[in-house]
Image (cartoon, rainbow, N blue to C red; front, side, top):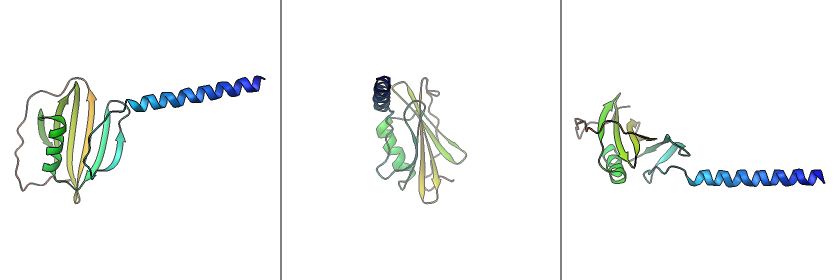
Length: 134
């Protein structure tokens, strides 16, 4: 009879772990991505959340997509040949990093909770012919 009780406890424990796991997945952070995104890393179970992917879309198309998703950027700057764009949405700081990788655009998105980076917009010298360098 003890064996039966032990098995019953194991089954109850496993069932509760499965339901807890399902509950945790229901609260995953949703990060929008382009239709042709080739995702190579996605950590969205909790904050900070990260999504990394390649797309054949150019920089302007990616920027337009995320402006539609998150609104006007609060800051843009170029760091180490990467374009870094910051958004503030519902108490979360969202950082979008774009870089050129061969014939693709690499998109890295980090979502963090809390205060956003300075609410000042920095001008980025935009040259239509300028490509993002790796």
